Image 1 (cartoon, rainbow, N blue to C red):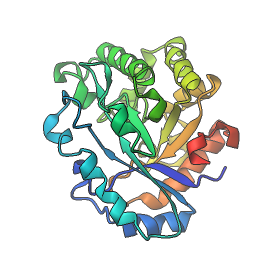
Image 2: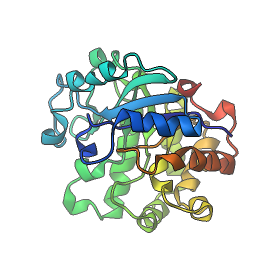
Image 3: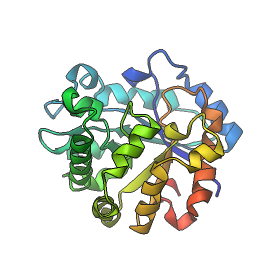
Length: 267
């Protein structure tokens, strides 16, 4: 299956992308080489209208005024379909997303992770798999049921905990039953919120290693539950970007995805 989109690109406007090669020209060059024509930019974001409870020193500078600088950079660039989005954040205090409806309407799309637990979970519990399970399932459900859920097009890297190894993820997923996964995947499917297949976990791996990733189980369950899919590189720089499309196409074929399985946003 041909993958022609990437809806999870970070530019230099994301603070955590500082120090990486984030020049837009680099992204454009690599996208053209692999047939990517739809580029969605999802820099990190927190709405200034909402009190920030999650790493304010990181999120507060990344407001709408800051992210909208990208629009000037894209003005006049031809050859791609551009989408102005953001990667919002889950607020464990309000049990909602850190975006108001007023601001959500200004984006082409929004993605939100349930797995930024390095920011939202007390560090003392970070390696506690039972606590991780609890907060991941809670966050997923809260996101798809949030006040701005109609603007959220996908859950970003679902259940892929930042900093966890492949084997640590396997241990985590072994604590979660298929029924528990399907309970939240059913909710996402009902609300039309896609499941992001994220390139980051596939990067630098062989085809055999990709096929053996523990996330494949989650992809298959999400598909069975009727979830649509979207692909994202989660690139914080264009190094390694040339492998994005081939890896995603391999995963799509492995899962037997068809056009009907892809989110309407990517069509």
